[in-house]
Length: 244
Image (cartoon, one colour):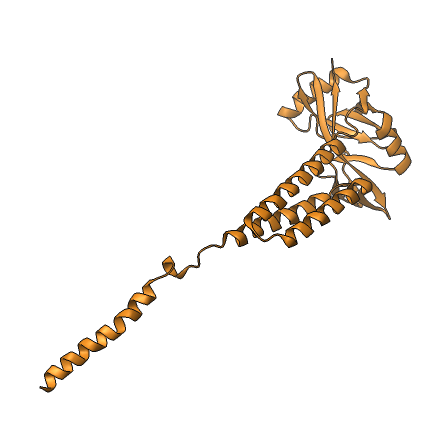
């Protein structure tokens, strides 16, 4: 008799625990919480807004920067008021429009001095040098001459005292005015400064490339403040000159 009661008790115990086991098995796979689409969209738009503000900081025109900041502030208010996925999509669309403005302004800035160069006396040497540099980087060098504000081409190593050099390009127009007025120099686009025996200095070496009959290169603008080189602005400027 006792054995029967024990068996019944065991069965009852199993049945009483069964719903708990079933209940624990319900819900998301692996205990993960389903993704909230609103929260997910909000996070993406929030990051896009941060990226926009970072892009605006790169704009050098202070008037334009102030205008863009006002637009970004208005978008931030819309972001704070957004409640649904549709709301956040509308905010994202506004962000993309302002980003397009910033990028358009950036391209305009980069091409600001694009045509401020004319051919010097070394037209033939330019072609020869560009082709030679591809095979031997030490065969020729292009560099900015800060004393006479032009770009020279050296055969062999740079030697400002008695090196074999010719004027490759003359600097004209707005760029020449900016250089003379603000004591800035053309610097290498990738590594505008370097450490020398005398300390940190501005790298005047410029990297030329030839596309068809057009010479193209990029540069930054730098200057010395308290005997230390600093960038005039963060922009990488584009330049090109036809050899035709």
